[in-house]
Image 1 (cartoon, rainbow, N blue to C red):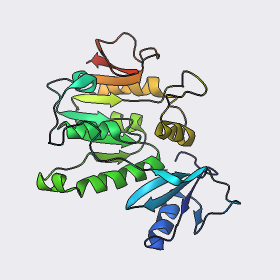
Image 2: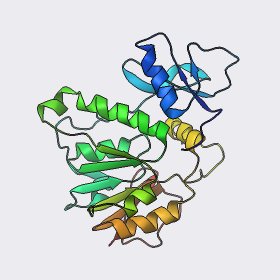
Image 3: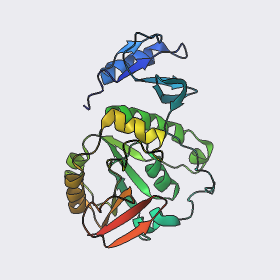
Length: 253
């Protein structure tokens, strides 16, 4: 388990069944508080707000982060949405199954799900996995998902390298979005969600090994999402597609 001791606790804010909070704290081996006070040492808290499991920063208790399951601004509302843009180009026209080996906040997994791909999401942080599981559960309860009888991305918790080594099928694509060191110590471009994730789980120091394992485990291709300033993770890619401030490098089997 990634060590969150001293960083994270479960906070009950008086809403809902307190036992759910206690069970979450016990499962993740985190402190449990029934109220917030200035003596609390942790920087972050898990709590349910407006029906969503959320991550709260002690420096801004009024706002919170949860897995966003709604369509992105400007995205078509039908399913599947059109496979356009750099991500879809990198995934490939004939791709049907994708393993998102670095799920994080799940936004790429959800984008791929909305494009009609069958998605398996891997996440090694038990904390992020709880947030993802909550998001995928809420996704399954949406009216349009139920009307179309769709299954949300499947979630598997654990070290992606170990999971990929034991995969019982060959996915068409394995997708990697590892943590890269920021270009500057204080980047104004860094999203709050990325900053929080980095603070909680750190950088992916084993991304080179993850890439090597993914290339062996994939059926057709590996796609690596990276900042536009970063060197290609696997050397020169077969193809590369540019997005806004990032790119998708494609390595064919």
